[in-house]
Length: 245
Image (cartoon, rainbow, N blue to C red; front, top):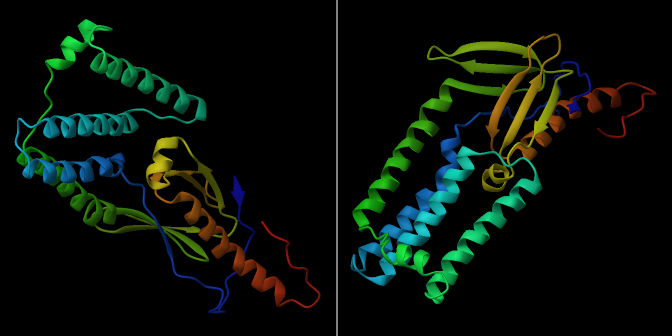
């Protein structure tokens, strides 16, 4: 948990910075690997035959990536141990598939099942899937987030929400910030995490899930609100500057 030192309003333009915007995105934004994979697979399928072995390989690769992406959305992996266990399971499954493929006599039943699966699709399928995800992204980034976001300024914390742009104001000095990394995969994909805001004189704590680039934004908030306090103390005769946060 980080605590920003108390700061008083200042007219010094060098201290003030541009507002920092915080948005809690839905988990659908983490589906971007599938979006780009669908476009790439569609381009490959566009220039290959539906019955081509290349199309089958592309289909298998796309299904694996799509499956991993869905797992990221469905489950949380808060610790390195859980992430290691997940990769061990995936490696075991992939090992069984490869062993049955290169040595059909080793696991004949598994090999027979795999031989009967032909996960090929045409370019239209891949492009339609990418279009659906892309359309959802358009609504998320251009419409949904405009109705619920936070704005951090040197002296106040603003919450914009609702279709009529309702506004709540909170005091920024003494703002406490808690950064939580609940899912390692989410942090790897977008640097996402949970940000908990504790405004001063406010009994409620505001939780923002899935905030992208959370580390850099926390650092910017601390710098914005902390720099004002440092500047004010520097202007006082005989004052002592804080060594750091």
